[in-house]
Image 1 (cartoon, rainbow, N blue to C red):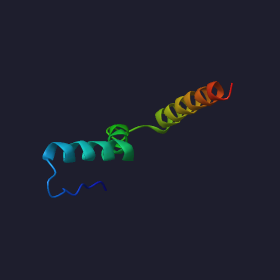
Image 2 (cartoon, one colour):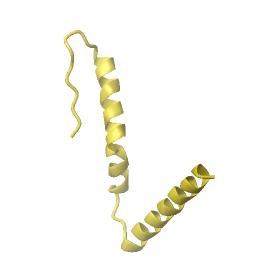
Image 3 (cartoon, helix red, strand yellow):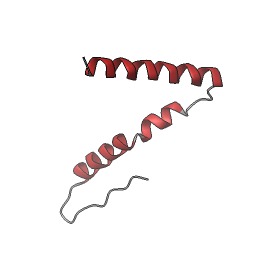
Length: 64
């Protein structure tokens, strides 16, 4: 769970920026997007396969 404690002289804008940064680093929004709709096992397998291919492509380019 992400939480932000306001400092004594800290403005709402800076606290909101820190909160948004923490949420994006924790991957909360990405998790919500993936769990928004029911995903069949076949769709889940395909999505993970695409992610693996994408990751492998990045790794191959990195080590050339």
